[in-house]
Image (tube, rainbow, N blue to C red):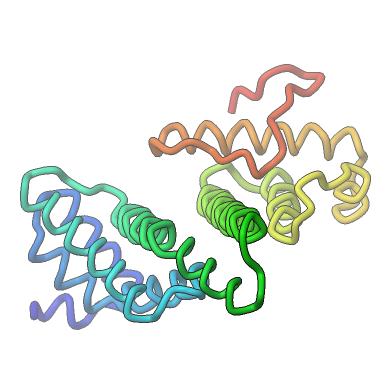
Length: 229
């Protein structure tokens, strides 16, 4: 392995891997990515998200993501957001495996518990919906946190951190009065800052080529009009 790669820390190595992926260097990407430890973190994160999948399946999903990135870069298709690419492909692979296997597994578990007939189908569908909702909510929170450093600084970031934390706790409609009390500002200022923060977040999501999930409150225009930041 290159001496420079050996001397870099985890964050620098991930940046090196991302740079290599963007410039079309698959070997350099893999070397730096492997040394960074990012893949171990990705496995742990996927295991937490998909706790009912066997560990070997989770490992294989990450391997599929790495293979996909390597194939894309080798084919001359630069990957500019390597971490996001790997997570998306690995998560989609986990979703596919869950969808392909979950119904039969759940049906067997329910029949063992003495539930049969239409009740099995209803329970399976409900569990599938719940699993998908949990996945989408986690993705919304992850994306929102990733976009926070891009929306500015100061109170707008403070407000959005509160909104995101509330959504993560299952409270997507955090009252402006609570935000105002927590930060020592007026309710009117809290409402404007939430609107401004969400507008910026959606704007940065569009720039990154992703669609902002609907698990966060809708962006609303404040009294001063559209944020021109």
